[in-house]
Image 1: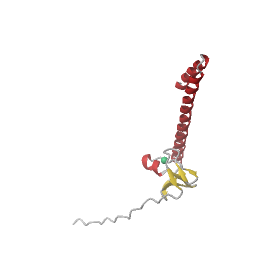
Image 2: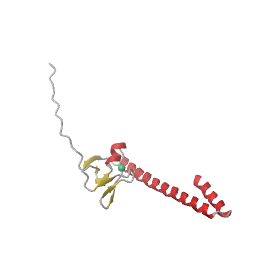
Image 3: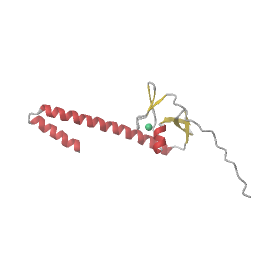
Image 4: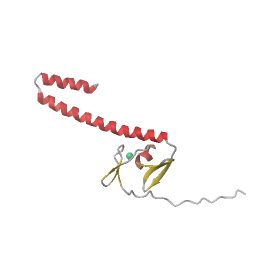
Length: 130
Ligand SMILES: [Zn+2]
């Protein structure tokens, strides 16, 4: 709605002989529309991941620092470990030339991410209460 008013202002500038001002406002409007589309893409990726997460019986698996989901129909992923750690969401990573990219948080991860450091198991001694 706000953009509609801005389009009307630009139209008025053009009809009253102010094309340079109209061009400048159009560029600003174009930038905000591009930003809105980027936001929609990020939100759609999150929604898709939430839908997938809700619909599948699953087991989360971490391998080489990335998150995967084992389902009855096979392994899915990889998903962003940063988004998963922050909010429990499963955002599917997209592959690019040298690694993985998260469409939600923008993280870039190497193709073979460093394995999550596994701390050695702690052995807790049982004590006899005598
Ligand atoms: Zn992420």
